[in-house]
Amino acid sequence: MANDMMCEALAAELEAQQAAQALGPAARQAKSHDLRRLRIAKRESQEKFWSRFGVTQSSGSRFETGLAIPAPVAILLRLYVNGRLSDGDLQA
Image (cartoon, rainbow, N blue to C red):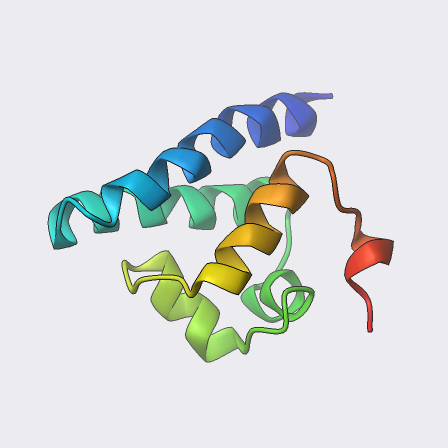
């Protein structure tokens, strides 16, 4: 239940991340830490969390520290965090 509430709160923050990317590196880095908090709230390793989106652990780490997220990955993240995609939907 607490994880669900945390996911919902972070979902709103992830949506704001897209807008923050236009603001510059400082704003982008602040929002990227939300991805890390989401992953930790789910108690998953970087490899497990990011692999469901077709992203390597290395790239996921970079996204968590402020690198811009490619649009296809950002869309999948948004749908996943909002509950419109499940883990089963994302498996190849």
